[in-house]
Image (cartoon, rainbow, N blue to C red):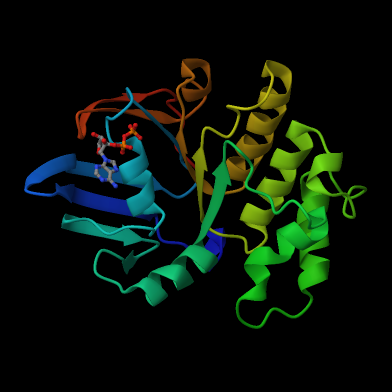
Amino acid sequence: MTAADTPELVADGRGLRRVYQMGRTELCALDGVDFRAARGEFVAIVGPSGSGKSTLMALLGCLDRPTEGSLSICGRDVAKLDDRARARIRNRALGFVFQSFQLIPRMSALDNVQVPLIYGRNPGAAERAREALDSVGLGDRVDHLPNEMSGGERQRVAIARAIVQRPPLLLADEPTGNLDTRTGDEILELLERLVADGVTMVMVTHDMDVAARAHRTVHLRDGRVEREVLQRVEEPA
Ligand code: ADP
């Protein structure tokens, strides 16, 4: 599935609850959250520590399942899927970008970007990985190891890995958190370019300047949506 044949609502979560059982007590990390993201929309999730941001991202990323509520990702109901089916969706429909890049240290940039392609049949994997690296401006760094690259370059490799399957939905967790302001800005511009091309991006951030660049900001508090702020009037692509 690519951005082009994705339904209008890429993520559609309703009444999402996630309750953790801690011995005899229950901890409600998400308490009835409605969350939607349209095709080509950039949504920032903000909120104090413990407000449920990671829990919501884990649900959107099909790493976890809600205790209650419905969740569809790219038109697929994922709330009740088993591990295998969710792994398939993660691989095909989702791209992940992390604060700490999460590259495999002993692998070249090219091999890191090929990691999502090792599942299933992927003819021309090296070529596709090369194209992805080219698209993030690293066509001349394919053989470099992560420790031979700057933070910004590492994050570009991670973005190339996230987009190599052309997923409709990108989930980014503080993607500029480990970068200086200028480099962070370049990474944001790169991510914004992907959004302009029709990718949907959901980003957790503590940085309100970063959140201000999203189309919409969802403020979480105590597992609930405290408020939503629409930043841009233009329609998402
Ligand atoms: P945030 O990402 O906004 O800091 P989290 O989603 O990590 O918030 O956490 C929301 C609440 O759920 C917190 O009170 C946290 O302690 C709790 N929580 C998160 N993960 C677990 C877990 N695996 N087991 C028990 N409680 C958890």
